[in-house]
Image (tube, rainbow, N blue to C red; front, top):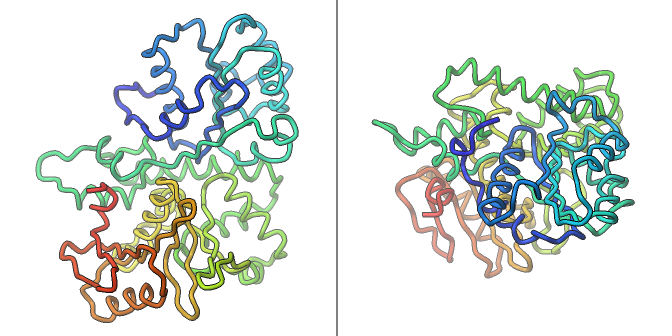
Length: 402
């Protein structure tokens, strides 16, 4: 496992875990795409507990995907391990890493809550673990802490600038190779892309194919690549069904499975005027641009706009917004971002230096006649003043919160 001193402290998820610490009636479930740093977060939080006076004998950690635990595949075996390692008369902090491998693991969590004084933390790489079976056993007794790959700020901390490097070159790395912590942008490009394809294949086989029993993995892979190539564009199930030669129901099942494996995220459309969610033609964004590029091939130039839109979507999610596509009459705003009762609108473009692009981006926001904040994000270093209360901000400055 990576040494903690070589990692970036994920302060926001640790803060969320700490806020729920010692709530033995609530399981803390950390979810996210494989290799995004969930296990490292657990190690960081265990160290945080130790730094705050919790002794080793009150901490129990088990990685269900490690070689030594590969034979633990049902709840009865896990029950025996729990019995052998946990006392009932003392508060124990219990960490289960990648618990979805264990059949019936929900029963273990339920018995821990009932029979032990256990503060429970779980990681999982598939949202399926939050579905009906879990709801049956511990309904209302868990919180989900969603993890994404590194933010650009965290990425800069993990890969600091040296020599003649600048923020722009590091941002280029961030776009090309993505932000999974295990990916070193200084490594050979072919090695990086092979590594990312390996992660993608593992996700597809372990978290999608094996669960759904998919026979035609080629069609599933084609749909995933289509979503990657179509980020920023509306996705129509019937169109995919026609081209893939499978039923719309199967397409929807595949899309849901890819979402549940956290390899893509769906952004629904929001009718700004009617204040309601529209029921069709959503957009999808990749959980990591590096995985996306490893499957499609890095495209210079015109593809940058899609990449940065993807980055903004993920960052808004990371900052706690519920993110949708804003629809207003015949106009569309890239993102309508909700935080409680508050809403902000965002347009994302590579540059505002073209008069045509500038007019298009500004008019999309001006068409929404309310007083909520409106922002244009671009890679320009020369900022313009769009007027009407609209802000124009450099994307990297916004990502670094400067």
